[in-house]
Length: 81
Figure 1 (tube, rainbow, N blue to C red):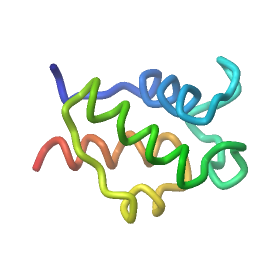
Figure 2 (spheres, helix red, strand yellow):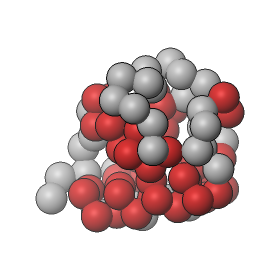
Figure 3 (cartoon, rainbow, N blue to C red):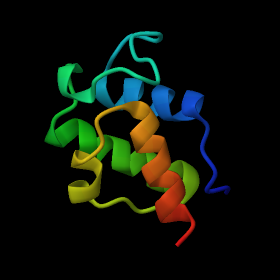
């Protein structure tokens, strides 16, 4: 497993976690405006990241991310620790 993540992977996992249609989320989408980006969506996303990348995120840190690009940066930062 690799801990590196592309923006495409990030967007894909966010779409899966929020039950969004493919293509509904872009790298600069506002997560606050995304249906399904609630506590359950975050937990599902965290599970996908753990399963696919072996990286454990903290909900508090994830809540601070405004866009998928920021989420990707967080995953990269945590993976590098």
